[in-house]
Image 1 (tube, rainbow, N blue to C red):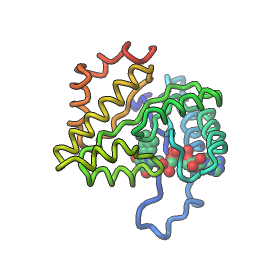
Image 2: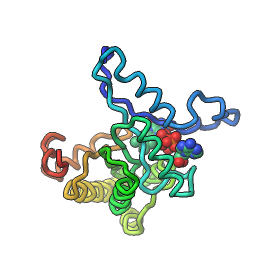
Image 3: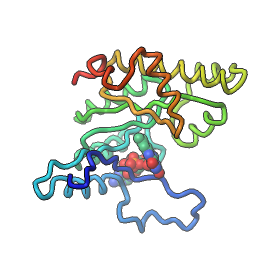
Image 4: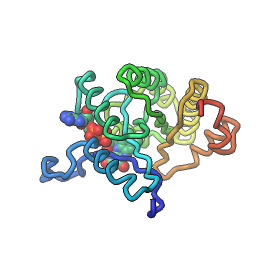
Amino acid sequence: MASGIENILALRGDPPRDSASYDRASDAFQYAEQLVKFLKERSSRNGGRGFGIGVAGFPEGHPDTPNRLKEMDYFKQKIDAGADYICTQLFFDNRDFYDFRERCELAGIHVPIIAGIMPVSTKNGFVRMAELSLGSRFPAKLLRAVGRAADDTATARVGLHWATEQCRDLLDNQVRGIHFYTLNKSDATRQVFENLGVSSSRALQGQGSKD
Ligand SMILES: Cc1cc2nc3c(=O)[nH]c(=O)nc-3n(C[C@H](O)[C@H](O)[C@H](O)COP(=O)(O)OP(=O)(O)OC[C@H]3O[C@@H](n4cnc5c(N)ncnc54)[C@H](O)[C@@H]3O)c2cc1C
């Protein structure tokens, strides 16, 4: 593209906080699917190469659609509207990701799925993560480990260990990419790389992904 944009993550977004007067019905796009369609139509205009369009995926389900079969139907429509890849909500148990990946396959969704990982850094941060990722499950094993941590330094060590093991397992299971939720704290991500013994994303290529 002339603008140099290569990728757009097309999200519906959450309603603004503290906005009692917010009315989704008056939004130009009610759902991300409509934004994906809008972007797709413009992506390769004027003979350009176009840009990649990513969408959000929710391994443990999105809270607005408790009917998980219906949710997958909506999700498939969003992909069919022109999505090139999926980036998932953060999760702490890789089994939820693998099950989501399989359910996508069954639904005929074959675009790459990038796994969302967020290392726990502090106890307060942990609470904030639960707010940000409505619907995500916090495994008892992780809760116990965080509960045992004496202070934030120990909590960060627990979080780092957990995230490293998640990444190691994902790479062993052909994940197509990992997205780190850093929330402006990129140190933990760097340390995950160190723990994995790699210096850059490039060094991971060929370890997990088939491409
Ligand atoms: C990687 C990632 C990054 C994120 N970054 C941000 C961010 O920067 N800012 C922010 O505000 N939020 C962010 N979010 C959160 C996301 O915007 C919210 O979870 C939002 O509520 C859903 O966005 P979506 O794009 O999945 O919406 P949609 O795909 O539109 O889905 C939203 C809900 O509507 C349902 N739905 C879809 N189509 C229909 C239909 N036709 N009829 C009825 N129901 C339907 C879906 O099942 C789902 O429950 C992010 C999420 C992820 C995974």
